[in-house]
Image (cartoon, rainbow, N blue to C red; front, side, top):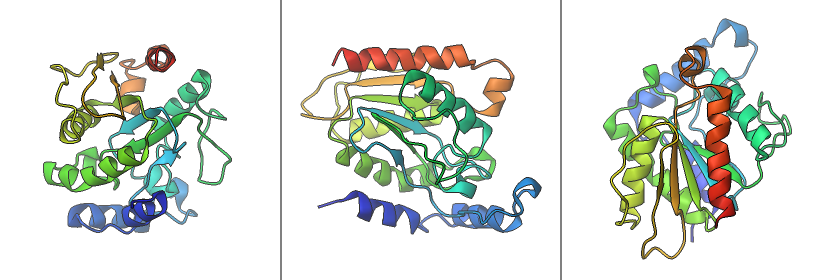
Length: 232
């Protein structure tokens, strides 16, 4: 029987993708000047949050100097600053900031994970790397019996969620197209698990600094997710 402990240990110990292993460890050795005193995590990053969550947030991958440094999803970079502030406003996070693994942050009814667990060069994992990592996401979903809403951050995360939903038995998925605020509901023979998929632009610096994604837009997405949870 799978357990969170076993899954976390296997995620952290994974060395399946040579390109990702080489890059994450190179970044951890060379560091960014602003973080030269940090002992970088430099390993795959497990999911973080409430294991009984109904809302599961799926991102792309750890940031090279964010989660690859701190060891916790969306922690220590601008993407995390934007995401956790929105989670706090929506009532899913105990505080609006995420700086390191021991900062006291807790999530309630929300869990954060990603389609790739190692920081990829240029934030672009290959199709083979995505496929190698997908079983970790599938195992997380299998352990989360209360999961009802998936929020996919960005096109790659959205596509990965669609693929995995079909693999785990949700054959009745409607035709989907990525777009900020897009929402798809489905029911199938799968007795438990997600019933809704919501899409959002990724809270990357590129998106937030250009105005493609604003705090208000992210708040609207979390309000949508909250309403879907309230409706059961």
